[in-house]
Image 1 (cartoon, rainbow, N blue to C red):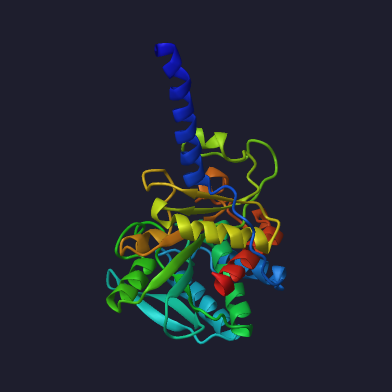
Image 2: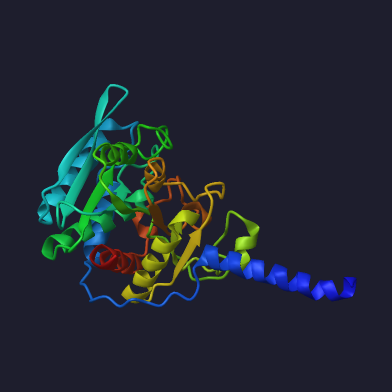
Length: 320
């Protein structure tokens, strides 16, 4: 009897393993094609350099520079054709600002796409997170030219970095709380957190859990979409749109918050209000050795691949 049970046991383990991998990695997703869109690669680099060089360091420890960086983001949204609202974020007696550009109908389920414009301490913050803000500004231009059929808010957040990270003082928390207070239905929120650093060589990608290296590539040349188990359906749709928008490899993971890095951005603020939310990222410190270091400079980023992420996010804004 024991010998007969062994193959059944192994088959059961194999089945459970395959189901687990499927739930985590979203395999067999068919690409959804989207119309081609002209992303301005030079503008992406220009925005990154402005934030990382002209307004460096743009942290809460340097309030004048953070204010100037916010002024730049606001001016660029307006120059792109948007009419952004300013949401004041009052923390420790000081007023900081979120900037919200709205597109599409004023009612109906809302898609939120956001990126934080502050940096950590004295670092230039090119990848973290001038890259995400540059993408947000380019999306602003594209959606102003051709508004989506769905309701979309593009939000530039303040105060994502320490000492306010994971607190009620984060700009994204203030935005999520305001939506919750109005009982606004959020279809999905996507945080763009570090999207500009890529490496093609072997063993250039690490993982927070050793076993993940068995199911994901060890080349740091992909964009990742990160979410919770409950957002499995949204993740499949996002992956399909990403795959159809460009040839940039996309990897997805649905995992609990206990996995290091899964909640390391503004999307976690929306989870606190039971809103569906995902993160689009180059995986930050799991790939980029310059994370929260002086070496996080504009020269280290790949703007052509950043543009492919913008194309994918534009497809999401238009077709999700």
